[in-house]
Figure 1 (tube, protein in one colour):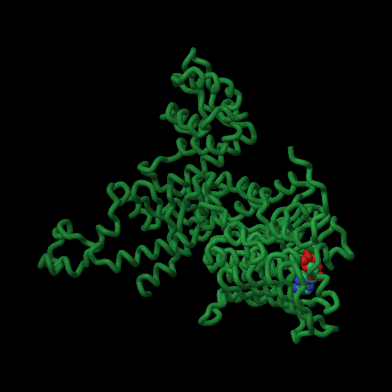
Figure 2 (cartoon, helix red, strand yellow):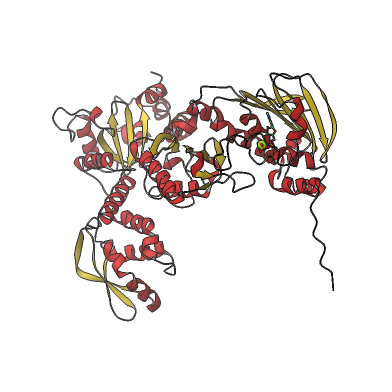
Length: 615
Ligand code: ADP
Ligand code: MG
């Protein structure tokens, strides 16, 4: 039998090392604390250096207020902070408030702080494994330099869990960038120290306080905002603003999602969830749009003291904040439904030049003329036997009907009201249809290629959804019910959801032990393949085990329905139909992408086209 050990207070060093386990998980997390201290000290420029992924050395130098010489030794003590003096825990406006970072780092590493305030002379202090080993006056500009060497030398077990230098370097630059994104008014620079000299990773100059777009561009590159929509909203004194990415540029992970509350970078479930909800109409799950979302809220309405690394917070009115964010992002998405994804357009232009650069893909007209040894003008019948550029330019105009229609378009006989010009419509006027799907349209700015199937799918989806939400789905009764055979268990489950299918315009009846009869479908759908539609819906729902299966898979169900209801590729459209489709797209929210997140149209601006031809 073992005896109960007696209870005793931990000594400071042990307590600090335990705290360090949470605050100083890796070099980047310690660095984050130091940069936050610099921001709290009103620094205008913050310069960061590191080597070996931060494992052997990193340093943060700022031009902030500095620490008084007389208080330097206090700053490195546990629970010592200057930030809770006037304010209380209920109203935190600074990054720090725990008074934990410096003592924690000092407990596991070799820590050196040099600092000077405006009034006093500079002072330096050195700590090793939690003990002050040196304190002396030093020459230093106003501000603070904090150096950390051999992080974890006092806790070697931790060192083993560190990633490669490369992984730690990436974490460091990611940490600095995330902080820099929230404060365009502060300059941030990052240097890696190498035996051969310092290497600049980046240097973001201090800008105006509201130059968020410029800072984001400096950090993420030009493309980020070219495909982003600015948005902003305000409710009950809570403001949010930022940029949200087009669905067509979404990625496979959430790396490109940035959230800030009162300047503090967060990895918060509320935001991830709200963004997911806002895009649920336009993106399948597993796709993550780019976004930078800033929120300004009264500090009394949040609790920042819920996570040691302070990357999560608690909203006192979580549910209403979540729906505020969700709605703001959704409105932002719908505000400019006709924005095309520029990266797609430039990629397409790139492909054009490729084709030109590779003669084997596109026979040279002159060459083939010579090879054939004949003169095109004199022997027009040779047209058929030659691989003429004309045939390459329009390989898919298989039918005379389409050719005739496009010709009509060029003559100006378009579906165009009196006095209307292409400028009146963002998607311009249809000129032709190619590959039995894509509509080629033109407006004053250039050429637009529309995926008719995807566009129609989007329109049907939005209509279905609107009808569903207003509880007014118009149905068409089938002349002969469709009988669908199912296994008995599945049948029971589907019948138990009857009222929910009803609300979607899908009227079903019990049809014996292993079948259902489909009696009516939404009028928006074509009534040709009801069975396969229903099978697809059952698949979209996946499992009927969850509560409210139809309800909780509503987007997937509506998507399958829309997909079935829309113009399948292969259907040829009349010019009037094409133009009607374009006009409907312009009226439809989220028309820029189909519900799988693919674009519905791309643009080729006239300038780019003319440049291509060297005009
Ligand atoms: P906290 O930030 O929670 O207050 P820290 O351990 O990070 O705790 O810092 C302790 C104190 O040291 C701070 O409250 C602040 O007064 C002072 N301090 C730390 N870093 C700086 C800095 N770069 N410039 C000015 N003061 C600093
Ligand atoms: Mg701090």
